[in-house]
Length: 431
Image 1 (cartoon, rainbow, N blue to C red):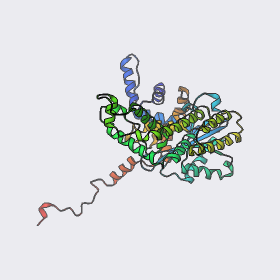
Image 2: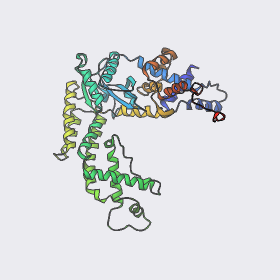
Image 3: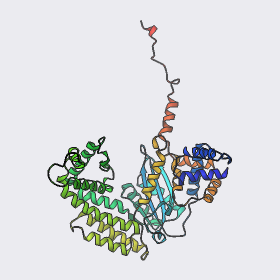
């Protein structure tokens, strides 16, 4: 029976199946191996076991014997609720592995849900977390104003005044592209043309050539893929005059709006985007030290001197290099990308999508199990140390009422048999 619990938790977090799928998988195994008697639990039991393991991981957070960096971010949920997530990553993580950070390299040390996050709320949540985990050497974050203000308020406390902040390089590059191109008439015309192209190609025989989706928020973090799509289409349509009847190029000419006026803009934009991609590949996969600093400086030197992108990235390089020197890391690369927490947020959202309306409920407690390493011994120890009552207590204290709970309360309050019937007149009484 204990082994079945362990297997259920491993199926959730290593195979990434839904909670409802686990009993079905066990049922198939029972039918395939009838001699083996397998106890098949209800899916709600699987949920409770998984969340108890996550709660145990949060409760067992202690001060680390090594220097580390905190990665902080939050995700938007239905309505006003947001979840603030705090990860711990060793300062020398790039000496232990090659390549970009993965979820196995980090530890979830804090998670909090609130309907409003301002500077005071972020500061208090970070203080509560660091009281258990100890203070980090630096905090890696994106460009969110509430996070920036909350961390500034935290650093006003003498206990945390030594903390350094690192701006996520992905958001820095996106903001640099936005500052350089967003107000240009040709760029806005290009975006409008791409939207028209998507509308014309959708539900046609050429739908396989649909352009990448244009994001409303965080548009410049994926804008390079759109420019490359347009460049490939222009190559297909290169040349003068009409294409031969029946060819792919001719069908594209009939469906697509003209892209040729944007050719010169695309060449300049893609040239800048390629330099940024090389810049990101260097610092995300290797971190920032003197070697990657020099490589990135060479890439930026290839851009025009008046480029806003070049100026912003140079400023980021100098600031982050000073942080790396302040931390006395030598040639140990400094982590500068929060992609790992973005990946974690994606897994959280995929888990929430399996539930009605995808709200932040106690399911969010599964987050710590997605980080670090999960094995049988740790699962057994977690199930023994945390009870179902502990799980209910944590949920009551940390998870605000969901929309589903509010809806049930509303229906209970205004049930039809409790609604006053004053003013209702029977038809037979009408004179």
